[in-house]
Length: 204
Image (cartoon, rainbow, N blue to C red; front, side):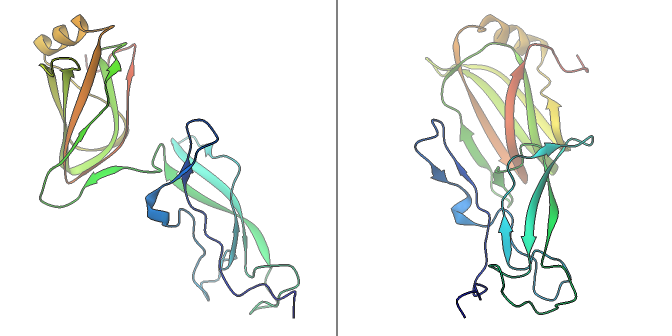
């Protein structure tokens, strides 16, 4: 039967592009949204049509609304004719939680950024470090001279500011407009995103 197109599954995977012409697959082709197990009672057991864009909810999570079908293809027979063949489903994700740099074992992981122009001294992280920590250093991109360091620990937050010591803050402020690099060291932690803002964290 040519209409029975239910011999496989659709997975939603991640890819990225900086120019919309050259694309790179992420996550070693692991499913980003995958079908529910057969017999689970959910509708998205075979076919998934990806969402157009996520929606940010009031809790700060990303919601993905997508189509989930019990079978692939129109006219294909399903295992439970009494149930709908397809429905709009919803998946949730922490903000900017698509990918992370993670060090989950006892060993530290280290990450250096490329040089970039520093526009503000106030650094924020989206990280998960409830049982570990994220150490971050700011270094001069030309000489690799140490400028400042901070630690984030025992936290899991999409928005947490790095607290600099007073002397470190002065050193960073002196390099605003110059190129710097960040060096992250992770232990039992995940780093999802980092960015600088014009305003300091509320704790300052």
